[in-house]
Length: 145
Image (tube, rainbow, N blue to C red; front, side):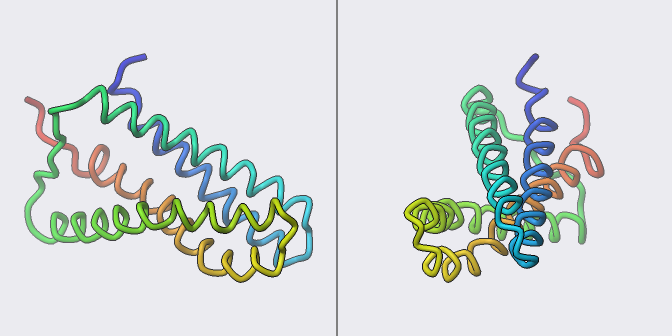
């Protein structure tokens, strides 16, 4: 495995997180608490693995930047998507912590109140992480050097 193998792994982990977050939301909406807990714990694990791989990738690629080189509306859209993704990715980590801690303390009223805000942000961040990957590495890859 090389550092260049990490972006598709990161996208896969983000996709798995997206699936588990959405499934966890569906299960709690249908009063299936055990399935909700299983999905959300798995989403936490896949998101944590993603973050570790993402940080490893950027640590190992220090000084090397992958540029989005396609001109026109794709570039404008890519930077809008990347900007919203990045800002919300920074915001969502403390939100997740503030949602998980009350659940662990069986403060489900607080967990539910905070989770209503955390879930859509977390879902957006994990889903757009996959889209950013496809835009940057698959659909509009940088020209070979």
